[in-house]
Amino acid sequence: MRWKLFLLLLVLVTVNYIDRGSISVALPIIQKEFNLSPELVGLLLSAFFWTYALMQVPVGWLIDRFGPRKVVTASCVGWGAATAASGMAGGFLSMFIARMGIGVTEAGIMPAGGKLNAIWMHSKERGRGATILDAGAPLGAGVGGILITWLIAAAGGWRAAFVIAGVATVLLGIATWWYLRDHPRQHRGVNEAEAEYIEASHRAEDEAAGMTKGEARRALLPYLKFRSFWAMCFGWLGFNGVFYGLLTWGPLYLSQAKGFDLKTIGWSTFVIFGAGFVGEILGGLLADRLRSKGYGANLVMRSLLGASSVVVAAGLVGVTIVADPIAAVVLLSVVLFFLRWVGLFWSIPATLGGRTNAGVLGGAMNFSGNIAGFVTPIAVGLIVGATGGYTWALLYFVGSAIVMGASVLTLDYSKRLPV
Image (cartoon, rainbow, N blue to C red; front, side, top):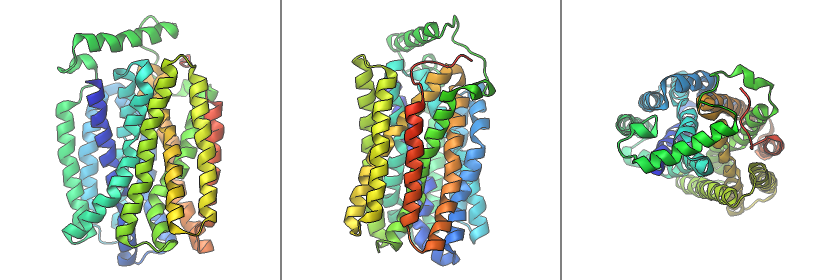
């Protein structure tokens, strides 16, 4: 049942990214309809991330206090309604407000997934749990490129497409409440053997951390004095500087710099982010396989994530050099394949904070990452507006990859922090 539950989380995160990324796919049309400059496009793309980031720590606390099931359900229903509302926007301001609403309501999904990874997964399976959860991001970005493009064509415009996507998300939220449970023993599909298998891992973790009970102090501030906490936050910041940059500006880059039409943008986005989905799943399998062979957590994580950072930075430099559109798509696919290995970070809140504080630590990590979410679209808009091209924007992504690489090599993945 734990794997079925994480497949549900994969679906939820996929729909999450289809809805949040839908504006990027439709942006060439929306930009013309609303007559937006590059600077206003950047501001509009950042609207989601302002509220999404600011809600991370509060929603992480709510998850630890009330459990992930309630937060995930409310989040899903809320962002579906906000997505439908964005299809009714009459101009820049109303679209900006709707996107802020999507940011508020989507905030709970990823920290809740990190909490469920801590509660439902054996410690040796959390690499796969983390990447199954996080793989919904590239899958949603890739599938969304085709699905939203198709919906726009089938529904006769981007507005109807957004409303349909929003209604479907609300229905998914209702189904989630029916199926999801906070703890394995609360789920009627979990037998005694599976429950004991998970709980035995939890007891071993608690003993290794010197705890007689499965509880620590519920708090965030004590973690601020630890290097690994900050490495976690800056690693996710650098990662999202690359990922959100490509997610928000990628379709417009393919349209303006490479001359792609809407249909070609949809398929190219599918290929690029589909490569990220495959890479993330394989990265999780590889990490857990190496751990099961007895390699230490630091050796496995630093080797895999350090190598991925080097490939990402080199690939982005390559994109600035090549002129051929197909070569650019191939290089971006390689970048996403290795970039998404860093989805392993969603196992870190459970490692550093245990089951008690996995929600608030996941919220803090995602808050840091989504600072890049609202800064990057604006920065890219200013760069493109000032230079008339995308070369310096891509080099901005290279800088983010360097921050990511330094952080993944600094973090200690081997022990829970003494809080």
